[in-house]
Amino acid sequence: MTEVTYERECRTALFAVARAARLCRAVQREIKAEVLAKNDSSPVTIADFGSQALIVQTLAQAFPDDPILAEENSADLVKPENEPLLSHAAQYFTRFRAEEPREPKAGATSSPGDREALIRCLDHGAADHGGSRFWTVDPIDGTKGFLRGGQFAVALALIVEGRVVVGALACPSLDYRPAKAKPGTLFYAIRGAGAYMISEDQARQANPAAERIHVGDSGELRFAHYCESYDPSHSAQDESATIARRLGITSPSLRMDSQAKYAVVARGEADLYLRLPTRKDYREKIWDHAAGALLVEEAGGTVTDIMGRPLEFHHGRELLANKGVVVSNGRFHQAVLEAIAEQR
Image 1 (tube, rainbow, N blue to C red):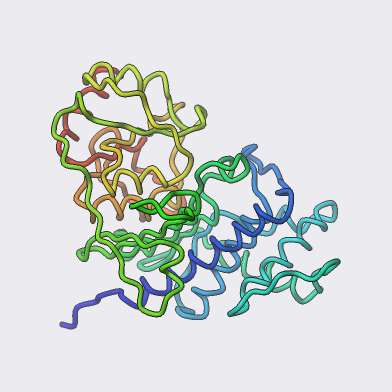
Image 2 (image 1 turned 180 degrees about the vertical axis):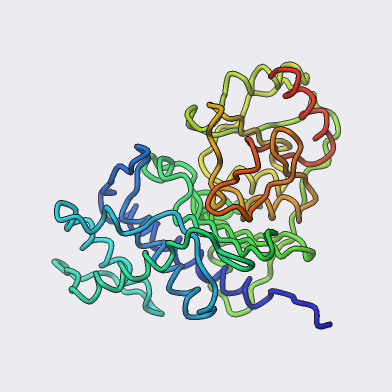
């Protein structure tokens, strides 16, 4: 039997998130980010729409038979009152889907064809369930961080038979290690082949050399560093602090938006990431964790829910069989789970 390597899928995923990250940077740099409020009151910007459309277009061209589960759709964007946002999103989508994006001309507007192409790509990512093989996309994970000038990520993962087999993360605000003049780091992993990072500048080279990354080797909780969500509505921060004290962790938490938290655990800058549910009925979205979870696992770490169960990515758009998320370097994962159980 021929072994499936997923190298082509990984190259495609890395290209897709890198290009989408450049679009997001341009939106931050050039205009005031225009925002829509979704039904759950979370924000979405023209960069979310443009980023997702770019990624979906890339995947649809390379793997036309693969379903795509993406976070956004065009339902709100096509409402008459949001026409200016649709037009701006279409401008950026059209500009960055070119091989060599150019600076926009003064007074440039999008055409009806541009807007229709954007809408088609957005809605191509609206699958409810992917089947045995599908992609999941978060065009901007951490939109509040993006708006605030903090951390955000562009996340893409391939799921086959319920397992994440390829993950790619672009973290435009996360410095490469060792520190470079410009921030911006890309991370990727293939199941069974390790986890890697590369700077955004290197990614534009013909044959870039990636650096393999590994979780930290700290085995003592008192020396551990942990991270959690920046937004208290995403994770029970008071409970995390209590659990940290119970474990003997003395350092304060590092609060960050997005799957950049997975990235800092994967490369050993943090030893633990706690995402504790703020309400009993909440279920995590698969695009918020798929790429990051594979990255940490391939870097040698451990990812489970707060009950110690592996994350299950084959129940549609949500982690229906899981509750919360615990990410660690693997050396004291069980102790953390026990502390959570005692606290709860």
